[in-house]
View 1 (spheres, helix red, strand yellow):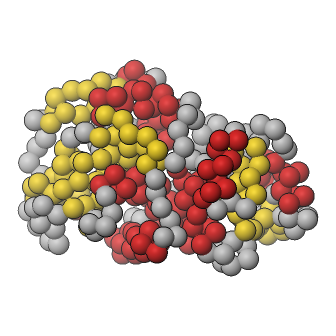
View 2: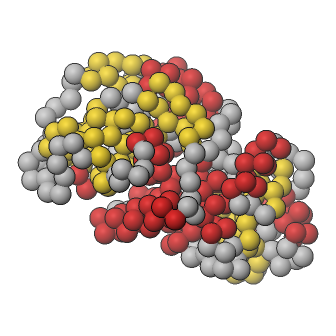
Length: 323
C-alpha cells in the first residue's frame, strides 16, 4: 500500500485527491522506486485539465528521484538500494511507483534527490533544445521566453556557457534579476516593452539565430519578428495557450524561417539517446555550467496548492513535491 495523488475527472487543481493505492508486483522489466522527491512541471497541469488525454483515473507526474526497492524479472544493471532518477509515463505523484527500468538513470551521490527529480524533464529539455534541436555555438544570439521559469533559467545558464549571447523575456523585475543572474545579457519585461522591437534594437538589426518559446500563443508572432533570415523558431510549451493554425507561407515572408514543435519524449525514445543526453546534462552540472536551484518545496498532499502556484506563474526555477 502506498499513497498517491489520483485524478478521477479532469479539471481544476481540486480534482487531485490523495488516496491509498495498492501497487502490483513489478512486472518483467520494471523497477519499484520509493520516491524521495517528485518533479513539478507545467505538463502536469495540461494532463490534469484534460488538454492531454489520459485514461481515468490516473496519477499525474512524469519525473522523480529515489531508491530502488524491488526488481521485476529480467532487470539488469540495477540493484535494490540504487539511487536513481527518471522521466517516464504518468504516475510519479506517489510515495512509490513501478517504472520501466529503461526509464531509469543512476543518480550519482553528488546530485541530491531533489535536484535529480527537478533535473530530468527540465534539464533534459534544455539539453535537447540547445544541443540537438538547434545546436547552439559560440557567438549565436538566442532569445529565451519565460527566462525565469524552470527551463528558461537552464537555457540562460547553459546558453551562456556555450558562448551564446542570451536575451531573455520575463514578466517582472524580480524575474528579470533571476534571468540576469542565470546568464541573460539582456532582459526584456514583456509587460512594459514590445519585445520584438527591443530585440531588434539590442541586436542592432541582426536579430536572433533561434527563439526558444515555452509561452505559446501570446509570443508566437512577435517571436518570428525576432529571427534573422533562416533562423529557427522552437516552440516547446504553451503556457499562454496553444498557437493557432497559421499560413505556413508566413515563414517565407519573415525570411525563410524554420519552425519546429519538438517533444522530449521523441528525443529520448531510444535508450542510447536517453543515456547520452543524461550524461551530457550531468557533465554540465558537474562543470558548474548548469545549476538547478529548488525554489519551492511542497508536501505531496499539498499538490493542489503547488498547481495553483504553478498555474498562476507564482513560481520561478524548479519546484518539487516531497512524499
